[in-house]
Length: 336
Image (cartoon, rainbow, N blue to C red):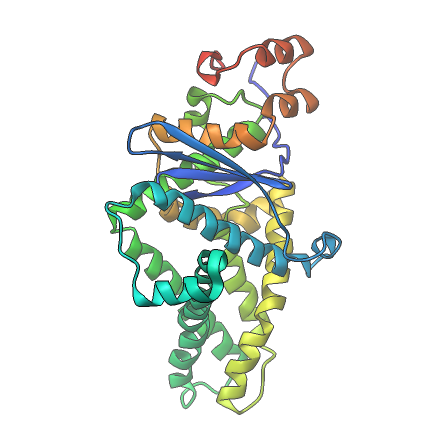
């Protein structure tokens, strides 16, 4: 008799890949696990500090914007933390560094981080939002339909994004980053499919997940096509300004869609998630066992997966007690 397919249960955990490591977030805490040059695993757990009141982050469509910015801040912090283990040599402070430290004192690092984040956002908007508009605008004398022009602009935007991803995959460091990205997804899939979290089970799990940031970015680009259709002003610079102004709205709607995809597992949601899952084949790679171990350490620092499996009926009370008695995941037997 065929074994029934295990239905996915939403766990609420999510994360990202960092340099030689994985960050995992659960509610008000996030953990970064990094494989240091000496092969030991460093784990750091931090409390999340929301940029706005928690009540705001519960408002549909509004919460997506703040959660996105919050994720960017945490993502940049964890990347800087992981990079600190791989600085080849001590760099002498420049005049700019000294000036920043003099003005902002112990806040200098945070200020630099926020400036870096702001510049990254400006670059992303210019590359993926403004540039596609001006490229598509070259066809304005040939195509009269504003709707068709918005669709063409969207196709160009998605093409630039895919081309950008393909380009960075040529870098060895990015390939390893994508392996850790795969390890992050595999751990979450392993848990949400009701499997004991160990290297063997994680290795068997999928490296694609519906709540992935890659899928979110693709949804943003698709949703933007729909919104930009309604921008009908003849002034090209006003068109650009309105596109930028609508980005928070687009991000808010896209967040609700990716959240819906992560919470439900049915044919309709799976079809809608298919493009993002397909794109993840470019941004995730199969990790090795050492990478999986790092990802597991990150999960265990902020999430009680044993309690989760017991709560959702994946394991019995006896199995739960047995798992709790074992301190190291390496000694847990894999599922047959």
